[in-house]
Image (cartoon, each protein chain N blue to C red):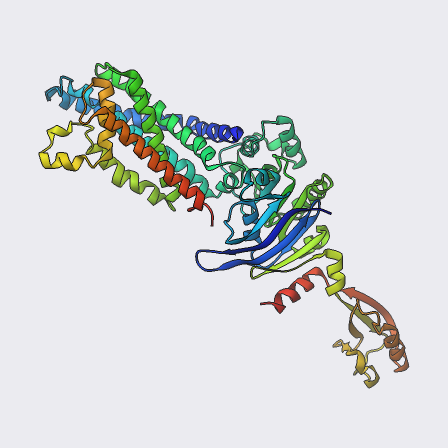
Length: 308
Length: 253
């Protein structure tokens, strides 16, 4: 895969002295969905803003499709669509007018057929003549997406797109993101909803304190950093863990009916088979067993906690 | 050149003007009519002619300037301040558009609006006092230059302002006094000698003087000097806006 956005040693220190980005380097592959995770103030929005031309980087460089964002800003910006975090829209313009304005602003000649297509895709067609101030929050969010798409960008940045959006609209939005990806649009999104990144992203980047802690293929990340747990349900409750089971560092539930074994799934010798044999030898009767894997959220929390 | 961007910004701003047409026209036309009733008819009838021009007619260029300056500044400053205030400026700043194209769209629209209002005031004045414009081409030239220069100045104020109070501060505290003291209602030789010297530091004197010359062929300072001063002001404003965009002053973090 070819990188459509290349970020190299990007740093940003605000006038207040706050360093929002520290030597961030990242290649965003064409056609992928990259989720950027990080707590508030981690630097996600600053990173996106720097790529889109809203923030002047202190050092480092960014190129989009091989063009520098400073010297070739006309080319790079025409390739990028941005959906900001806040619902920043005018009040008195209609939905149609605002999309038409956005297309013109990006140097594209009017194309009513395309605007109609975008509005229909976003279920906004019946609102095309409505004034923006009369729309609900969810509708405004769709309009912002429409404004970002109407100049046919190749890279779409979605900054916290589902903040304050109801479940149904969120599902619609992810469906739209998938359709966009099918048309080879690269999607970069920031989100607090880790389960969404888990559901939709191809790769996940974790940012904290202005540093990009990691960028990994989502499945590989979960495999690499994910811990698995084996839950053993007993037929009869045990008062304590027999000494012969000490090497597995098991946990006994309060009612004495469940043993939990935490292990590293990437380790070829998990010790599960010998554990089950030893439990049986110790006279404990098995009722059921199941495994669970830590979620992306657990991984994220662990990463952020490790590097405060 | 991103022609489509200039076009949509210009059209958007003109549409805003059209949507508030009554408000945009009513206020300057009514206040100008009142000036003519008070200064032209009530007080003007008791005043001497100035340089062979009746007082009511004499004040027409000054009154037009008063409105042109305040309207140009108000239109342009609001046009760029409001998107900054609401946050919608992000779209312009992330678009493939140069500072010159942004300026052409916003300042062009603001200057067009002021020019329309200026011409409406001129027509209104025609109902109250006899008017004969000696150099109509020069008059239009001064009109356009003034509208563009002060729309640029307004654009700078709009970029600089961080709240509505600041937006009003310079027009109220600086521009209005400068226009009133710039010879809108008198020629500067009517002032005591010391004040005549002080007045020459007021840039608005040159605008009004040149504009008045295009009407009556009488002026406080030479036309060439008036033209030079307007062009100098225009250039200075362009340099400041260029610097603001280059550094991202109050636009980028």
